[in-house]
Image (cartoon, rainbow, N blue to C red; front, side, top):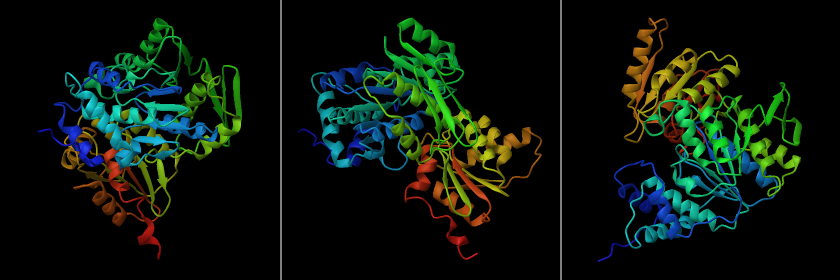
Length: 441
């Protein structure tokens, strides 16, 4: 007797988790086979974004500008913060769970045709979302690579313009132990004769060499495009195009100008197929929103949410916190995956933190709160224990945040970081109302 197909998105996601023995398995053969059975193809231009940090911000800025220019956009990003449907946006809105169901069913039918194909959770869900986007009447598709590039499921779609953001050490068990090896994996999204925008100011040589080897049209930061700015405004110049006197992007942080520069290079490279006006650029960058990227929730105390989860992004978070100015006490809520380079992450932000709230996360990949606390104490011992920093452990991010709010004074700040699970854990019921206890003060 045939097993009935799932009828809800949650049931489909549970089904996808059971199909493959590994969470992650590199390689495109299985995904490509199912994509061919689905006759998966995009009629609109496709922009594919890879990199270690800055991918989500780059996709959000591309989407915002292209929406302002009047295009019907489709975006695939991962992971999600709270709801799976966040991974797929059509014309600026997350798709509904119901809209995804026929695409999950189509992938299941296709993978069982003839010789059954085993797909990981990421591969199955990626194919379902790509099919949804390909059938949504798009004028442009923006696809974020999940891991690496060359062997990532997203790479079954040929890109019209590749964007490679900053490259750093992350997912080394899959991608390699140094920036050159990791860069070569990211470079796998390039296509011969098509533009590739490299917005990393100091890219690995392997990325540049690969572009030359396959004959991609390389747009390199500092050579083919650049930005300048003062405290009030910024400008961008690239091949045959210039923007001046622009307001800073709505996404905060010094690193966002690098991301925005890559976005403008990609739009310039595609201007014959996707023309955008200067006004669309200004409006899009001024209005872009992306939860969890140096997101400041106003109130007393200030709350900063950031999905920074590797040494490079934590260094950027630290610089951005430094630039915020003085706070009497910084409370840090941290939950993180066990496979991250946790020592350097703690060392980078440690000098700014006055109280730690370590939290467990609802995934077996996560380091325990007690494990994070032990790593912090080991770091302190190695540094000679120069500063007494109180620490505590919690069962989930919301419990940790509540404890931080209870301990904080109105002028303090609270930063929540370390993983999408950590930030998502405090956003699951909407933006927290932190300043309630200080309203009567």
